[in-house]
Length: 220
Image (tube, rainbow, N blue to C red; front, side, top):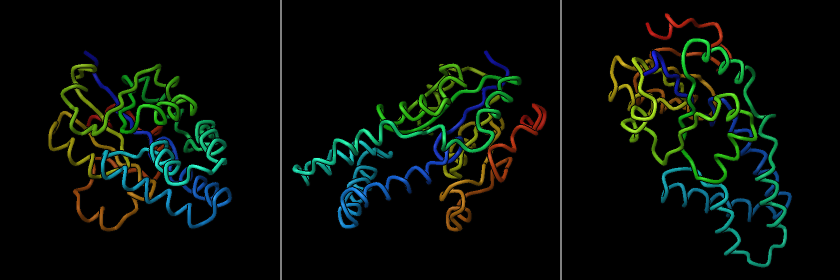
């Protein structure tokens, strides 16, 4: 059993996924035009409603079924798979993982598909930084028993840009978890979301700010 396990989200926590999506929008518009770019995102939202997580490659498959003669889809899939994710890490993300590693065990806890999300984690350097300690689920807040089984700890620290997730885990684990809210990305800045859920135990403006916190501050 570890004394402290740090559970780290990826999208808009360690990595600026909003910028990845913006780049994808531009690339789709340049390759297929604005109308078909909007159609791709319609497929994307349909899949997210059905699956409960973002599936960029799945949306591309549906796009292919709708436009079977678009030869540019081959380049589109390559663009997605080979996206330069290291350039989208928030400043200080890997330094934060190293800092937390001196006080406990950093573990990635994320949602997503089983192809693109692992690719993103590997290519960005996050997988190597946490030494392969990666948990990937459909709804991570529903897998806390499994998290405990794989990484038993006296105390957990959950770092996530979604107050909904932080609130759900706090309700389940109570004082056994410290919730940390980096105010990054569109979820973290949405006034409606901010008013709907209670505040986290710790809030920071950016993920890099965590390098200034001690173990006692995390456990307080």
